[in-house]
Length: 340
Ligand SMILES: NC(=O)c1ccc[n+]([C@@H]2O[C@H](COP(=O)([O-])OP(=O)(O)OC[C@H]3O[C@@H](n4cnc5c(N)ncnc54)[C@H](OP(=O)(O)O)[C@@H]3O)[C@@H](O)[C@H]2O)c1
Image (cartoon, rainbow, N blue to C red; front, side, top):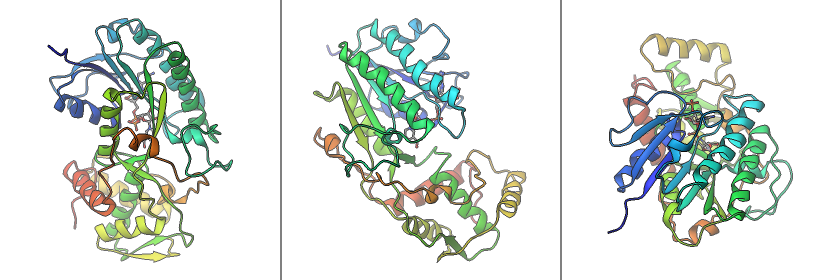
């Protein structure tokens, strides 16, 4: 009889891991979920739950009997100081690896980020996973520090694999593209017929949550990937103007290249009005409008040859359709107001 695989999933009070749990359960995995906070009310009943802070708590019980670890807990710059990012990425990963190494582990799947490559020093593009990274910001440095912990245990014989996704969007996301969707809803509700976007088009890179979850489950079991890292990006690279056109289209607006949109004060007032009328303020409101689309990255293009050579295929390539579905999901949760 084949033994049922038993996954420990960290970070399940956060965006990606909360969605990985039902995906693994649907594939027949036994799942133990963990996060710092009490059991989330919407966690599937079939999943066990243990609350633990990976930086300070004893992790032996968490790792008991586990065959696979999906380590998604971590801290990002939008919520944490540099010290918190270092502790919750580097120290937490190191302690979890030590605890997991004591058992009979088939694979440790670690969620890193393409932020480790940095944006300032020109790397050979499309960026391959074997390039020497050059993280520009604190978050990328903390994620690279966490990877060093993973690679050290890998060299000592632990079966480790690392995913490096770009910006993740889709149901459950609360930042980046989600904030840009909220910005568009705000300006539509304020009566603007056009969505203004900066004149210079900037290339974006995104991956849909469903593709990332499939990549996680795939890399946990596919042979021949121990000790390797994999970029995860839907290879469509829309420009900021393309993204604006999709967002505007979903809200019945036109795009205005060079238009400035509303100032922060007026946007904030519309957002407060939304919340006063029952909006769940889950999506991050950012002082800068369409903030996602203001960043340039000279290393934007990434190679996905390594992932595809393992037999993985990206499925979410209809960006406009995925954004429309995502907006419907936000409305169903009252994270966005119903259309007027
Ligand atoms: N979202 C993206 O676009 C993206 C892109 C590339 C890579 N990633 C990586 O993917 C992973 C998941 O991202 P996400 O967007 O789902 O993040 P998230 O929503 O911020 O969730 C992070 C999770 O980590 C937990 N956590 C942080 N420090 C912890 C600690 N010391 N002990 C135990 N749990 C701890 C948080 O717990 P609390 O709820 O208690 O805070 C939360 O459950 C992260 O490693 C991130 O770096 C994300």
